[in-house]
Amino acid sequence: MKFQPDPRVDEGGGAEIPDFGSSPSVMKILSGALDAIAAKGASRLSMSDIVGASGVSRGTLYRYFSNKEEVLAAVAEFVCVGFEAGIMEAADGVDDPLERFRSVMIFYSRYTNEHSPDRIFEVEPRFHLEFFRSRFGRYKAAVSAALDPVFGHFEALLGAPIDRDAFIEALVRLQLSTLLVPADANWTRTWNESPRNIEQWVLRFAGKHA
Image 1: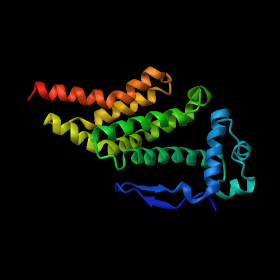
Image 2 (image 1 turned 90 degrees about the vertical axis):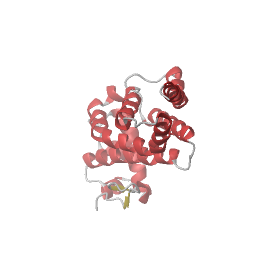
Image 3 (image 1 turned 90 degrees about the horizontal axis):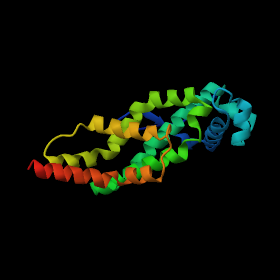
Image 4 (image 1 turned 120 degrees about the horizontal axis):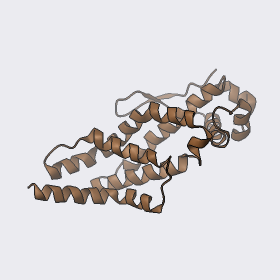
């Protein structure tokens, strides 16, 4: 029986999302595989490497996955689902638009730093490029859903609609750029302070056009 996690329906009406928490063994396998990919890259990765990094038996690994390709596909989905869930958790229950914006931005920056291995594109560029390209739209959708009330706040101040898609795409592309040129303390501070700065720009612009 191969890996078929219990599905759960996205509350936003999207596609079914695998529930990776349904099997502790699968979680160990995927976490171990991530470590092994960071160390060796995807192309050189073997099922034996995954066994060694995850601490599960070979029998347990093959109970869920037939080959390395299935593991890599599940790893990519595991990372993406983790981002989608995490960014909504960062925004959930934060009613103040500016605080919600700040919480989402801080989470995004921290998640990128914590879940991106060193030398990510030097070790295995093809695997990571394919991951980001194939899931770019999902990253945008997750950030957009988390920031929806923030856009409503800014649009109310301006009295006009904002190009939400362009704004979100700029944020996602900016954060992805830190995988090529790692963020230093100055950039992280600028990123984390951007909600307040953007609100100030909006207020100044709204005042000039009142």
